[in-house]
Amino acid sequence: MSDLVTGDAVVLGLRPARLPSRALAILLDLLVYLTGYLLISIGLTLATASLDPAAQAAVSVASFLLVLVGIPIAVETLSHGRSLGKLACGLRVVRDDGGPIRFRHALVRGAMGVVELLATFGAIACIASLVSARGRRLGDVFAGALVVRERVPGARVMPVPPPPPWLAGRFSGLDLSAVPDGLWLAIRQYLTRMNQLDPQVGAAMAVRLADDLVARTGAPPPVGVPAPAFLMAVVHERQSRDAARAFGRGAPAYAPPAAPVAYAPPVMPAAWGHPSPGADALQAARPAATPVPVAVPGELTATPEPPRPATGFAPPA
Image (cartoon, rainbow, N blue to C red; front, side, top):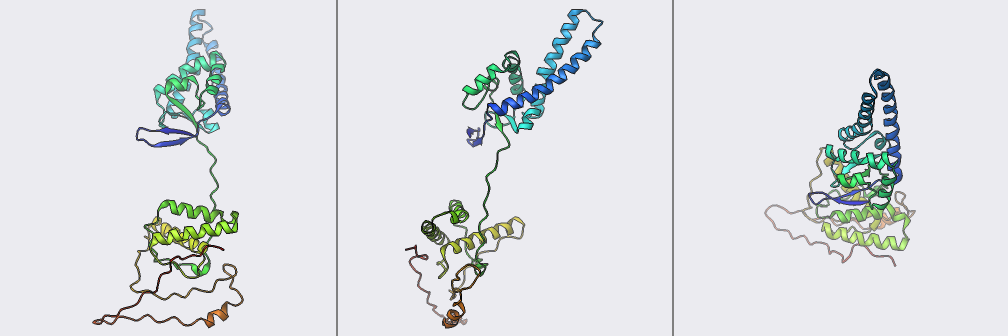
């Protein structure tokens, strides 16, 4: 990949075209142009049969320059660097700063192409392309242009696993504005590759990412929720807000609770979505949550806050 810098100090990640793809594009272009030149030459020979040899030679030279030099220059100028062969091979001619070429760039490339491609049968162009770090021939160097690849195979994007059903909508009131994009990217990369990691390493990484996310949101960590499930649920919540904002419905406003609400997390299932055999017994044995006192107008009621644990997630043994 070539790091081209524009006038605005923006680095462009472009893939320069190499000799095989460029040679194939040039061969396709020459095949089309030589076929057209042959047909035009036959027609001009029949039309100028009554002229003297000097006039016939002048017409031949003019047709040669028009078909093999003028038409390629016009095609590259009008198509912004995409001739028929380059279009078939997924290539494009651009300026050194990544912008589209103009007539002067195409004129220099076409004039040099007569010497590089036609007069020497492409020998000079092949040598220059092999020596150049970005695969440029002499015409590209003098014109300040570069042939790049437009069709680049995209990387496969792995989807983020969905959160457990019992965590759906649990973090709808969480403030995610302070979470940086780098942390979101790290969480997404972990969730898409956690099945490929060692269990101990993956669990420690999930705990570290979950602690960073809790520190950014400023909310106490959920009790009894494993770190991977917490990360999945928060990422799903962010994706839901982004989708709502994209479709114009607006993201839900963050409203912190007026008083801490006692939250009794469900019993951890053996597998997400499938409760363990003793879940009902443990749920029945769990004491009922203490009701939260309601403040009456005119009275001051002090509501003690539950103690916040030092860390929300315990790393694996």
